[in-house]
Image 1 (tube, rainbow, N blue to C red):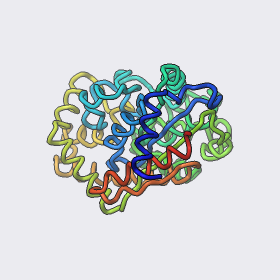
Image 2 (cartoon, rainbow, N blue to C red; image 1 turned 135 degrees about the vertical axis):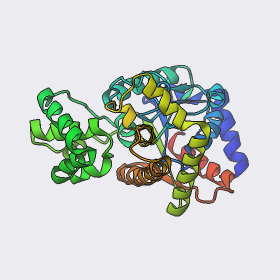
Image 3 (tube, one colour; image 1 turned 135 degrees about the horizontal axis):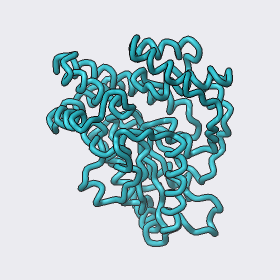
Length: 336
């Protein structure tokens, strides 16, 4: 399809609101953009959202928390004024947000956005959260053992999160690869599932139905690894210039302690350790850059196991228009 045809197609979408026309499909249309941190999702998402008359649903497990703006790389107020964004700043940092809640809220939003004649557009990098909405995942509350959870929390307190994570590696290495050692709540949940049911979390996920309730288009962004790592380091340097240390200090001063899952997020745990005197600032930043690189590798590993993703290599940052056209072609094939 030639460039002129792409844009005529895009204009027809905005003018005719074909996304919600029940005569075209019984299933709601859903556009999804995923990729590792710092790959450039925000810039592309804003361009696509304006072209396709979208509302954006954040697919990031940390952006739900108020007061955690710099470290989670939220879209700016200016960017959010251009396109409606959802599931950002909906909870305080001490709220135990879950994938089940994300799935429920996102699916409600998809129906509402479609009902307004717009295209729902999930943008984010939290693989399980995004996948839970794209496909017919069922989350059961069975297999809960609060005494076991407390035992694991105490173990982590005494021996550290890395030691707790090693316990998960021993019983379910596939899940351990996908969950960051700092994500204590999810590590404990995976251990708890095995403890109470004898089933690994990876086995449960593998048994989920991979059929989508939506007319689905998933675009994944990838790039040369060395360039991605360079962009990660530049992003962290930028966060520090924007005031990441001050943001973490304010959260600690407000009483949000390091036992919270939100405060175990990348950027918050390392800077809080610096503020507590555990590390120098230089040491904390070095750890943050290392952990973020590792996180990006896990994100890519997760997404590569997802079905239906159409990949676009965005290594050539100077050729933004070519990346946009490649995505237009994917959307034209999947959602028309």
